Image 1 (cartoon, rainbow over the protein chains, first blue to last red):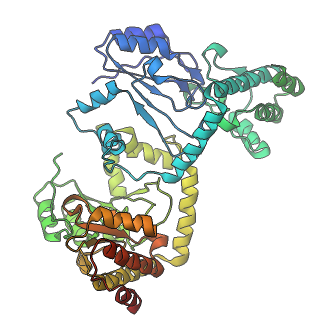
Image 2: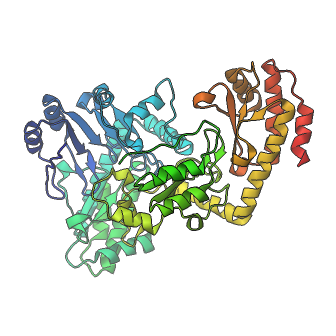
Image 3: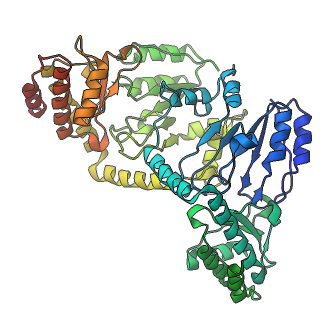
Length: 279
Length: 279
């Protein structure tokens, strides 16, 4: 079938009304969105989009790669029919797993499928593997699954609500620290993910020099800007085990040092560190 | 395009002439075979099939999942255009990686492709990732790659020829040990993989009871028979680090014990152990 893209500028939140219009203009079989968008740090408000999808009889699929383990999300409550995630972000597991979940409605759609799909994406084979038959589908990455089990024990011990609160607290501390440095977050706080913050460069700061300084002098790696933001912004991930105030203090001090090294000398590092503590 | 299957009975080797006929009956764009077949333990003689594919202008693709690190295979010499493997068998890396390789001919075919393919199988994206652009394709499973690097150091230290010889020695020792137990390998030695040996049960031995006894009393897991061999044979993997004579001795003694526990009492365990040493 045809794919309809609902576009917004980088760093702007998806407009739920525009999504609802696009869904209603269908017939729409599937509506797919990213929950926490790591290219920009935009958080999608799932509820109104899920409601529009449900009303149109469409399945609702969500990319939870960055949100899982860092935000509370009740798939049944929101009405998520299919979701996939990664474990290397807010779950702090080594990369290599992509857990998925499907609603009974999604599995019924799969069961009705008349055209073959590639092996790796064949949910029918996957359900055979996880069903009572344990039909062979793949060799499980056992050491990764042990790591995931350990991570889920940590999540359960901390509690998902506390975990979301920690990510939000740490993201807020980072934002407070940016202003005295003369740095500005791309995404307004009401549309921002707590785990990924995109920061605009002040005029004249070279992206490569700034990030190299962070990497080589401070052992800190931040992401570069993507698409239209390449060279104009950097992306700070504070996820899972790494989402801690002490890391924000380290990062803020390092940003100030790197700005100075790049010739940008009006950063108030002491003020930034105090601001991190202030909340 | 249409897929033509060249079928043989379980445990029989692919007939190169039948393959050559099927290729020549084409137009054939791609010919794909399994090198070392873990369902049965059949080893495919790649050279005549590769030659037939080359003559027809077809690409030649090989599943090397079980052979990599256990058999010598020179992709360029044989004329392999695409190969994929797993690292959890003869490389003894935890499961989770599937290295692939492509010839320039295969990459040219990919570059000419006019229809989109699913993300996971999009070799064009993959070449962008591994090219100078390092274009984002996936988050690399870094801990698995460290494990692979360690394994490849071990392979280099041992040497691939020595590694193949070790696998062949160990498989021969296993075969010698089977006869005094009254057990018979499914695949004639000239068509057999050294790393996987399928063994027929004597009449009256229950597959579930036999394998449970091995697992619970000896801590040894062997594979069950597949397809028409289900319940009629078991599969012994001796791969990578595990392909050692002492493991053959343990396995042969355990098979004798499990046969006796299943009511099959004419196994000569002492003779089997002596036979393992004899080569």
